[in-house]
Length: 482
Ligand SMILES: [Zn+2]
Picture 1 (spheres, rainbow, N blue to C red):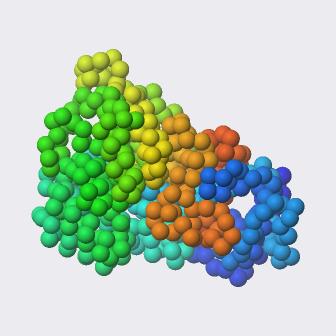
Picture 2 (cartoon, helix red, strand yellow):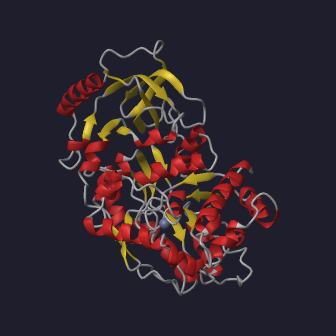
């Protein structure tokens, strides 16, 4: 079987390359490309949440999905290249909604991974990203241009503007706003430069937030936030569109919170959050408020998981992608965060509160969806450096399943919901005739066993199939450096 597929890939790319040119940066990763393609005998998980359908044929033509149905019913066009995908599943390309192009390089500084991350996102099956905060906005904008022109391999990008941050920030790479006029100025400047959305950060004032949201909305751009000075309900009242990370960053329930202040973190915070009830009382009221005001929440379980002792299992493929320095830093951070003496000293307990807090975040996300909320999925490649482009997005989907969503629901959250939020649901996010052919070919069946989502072999973006393993191999030892 496998041999047949490989032969088909070779033949099809050879034929197609006669008529189609890819840059020398992209060409080595193109595994399959033909004007018309038939993916036959494949299991289709269409991203709508509908049951998986076995033994389907998908016809791709001109970069789009032309037709789709039972393999016995859909005729394969005469000129089509045929890929027999028995034993494989296809899901829509993932829509990564907290997918930065940067990675922590130490001392609170983040380095742009302009070479490695676009490749890893695509390799991991992420065909669209929202960058959700830029530290090098011009690099992100140039990356987008290069990828769209097929001069570089990578996902489609929704570039977020530089963080809208207030006075008092710990983050050296962020501009600190001087007031509402500065917020309006910054939003308009970056919209002129080509970004299409914004992210608010910890120390912004309510007045600056209000001005930024008004300026963005006036020009059709959405605003998300990783909040601290303003609580979720406060931001919802000001018209924010999305909230990053969920309950574990909402300060509004802390007794010490003063209006407009970002409270200093305290060791007891995670235990406090873990003790909140999400199904009744103030947190549930907050959930209902978000749902009523159509405010989305972006789940980033993969970055939180790093703080939970004993988790996750660090994968060899991820460690191999890291530079020696980055790998050493990650392993040292992880060991330090799990040190028993340090945990006892910090939390006055033998157990880190991160385990219960992590479970509470999962409960919150389930309660939010149950109440009718729009949950998005991202990875956030920050924290202690254990979340990498693409791999982290796959882990995020697995963690949504651990949180209690079915695999079909988790895939729906990580594909269709993001597409809908971005206003692109008519083009991407689900598998249906007329949509762009952004598809992930996976060995196995993630509708039954979600871990199969790691077995990505080919990623189609606008009908061109990229070789996942080759993309990953091309950045071996590079993450943390470039
Ligand atoms: Zn982030």
